[in-house]
Image (cartoon, rainbow, N blue to C red):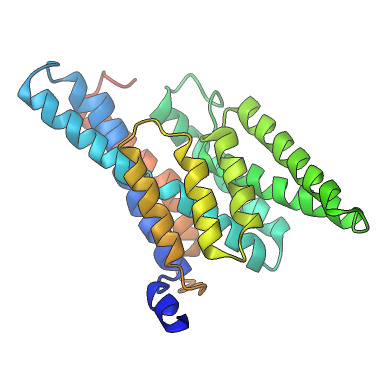
Length: 258
């Protein structure tokens, strides 16, 4: 039984990171270059439009793999980091660095800070979890019901903050982080809870395949960190690929986006 389980769990943390990055690149390419670009140059109802819209949704479905993996790796980072404060500062720095490219992609240059990127969601998830743990540590003699209420309170506050800030994925991401963290000692339970929660918030039924793939990949996590090379490259990939896609959009479809 253990051998069968270990044979399924072969993906390192670094492998999951780059799977998430590739998935995200595919998603954002579809969102920007096809959604804002190609589909604005093709007449609706034509065979070409039908082909592009199908490709668009296929690529967006693949893109659903990324976020659950990012949240899962956040919870792993909280468990294994030597300093969650430094971890939070790092997320905050890249949240700020990513905001201009994110707003450029999602809205326009005049709407900075209207919607916030996914690093803000991850940072709020981290702070929510650490706040709940701090409150529980101060109430260590309290019964289980009180501890549950403290976690619910922290999750509610974190969710409200995410929604008020209009972060990417909002309360969905914060609650997902809490669920994956609390169930981290049971991988199967963790994947089932995460899948069910994320599946309740589908933009399209075809996205279910991408979400399922994400949690299958998470289940295949070996528990090993993998290579530490390129750690900051992984963080920097988010703003860099968005910026490059925006530049490419300007070259190919100038006038449709800005």
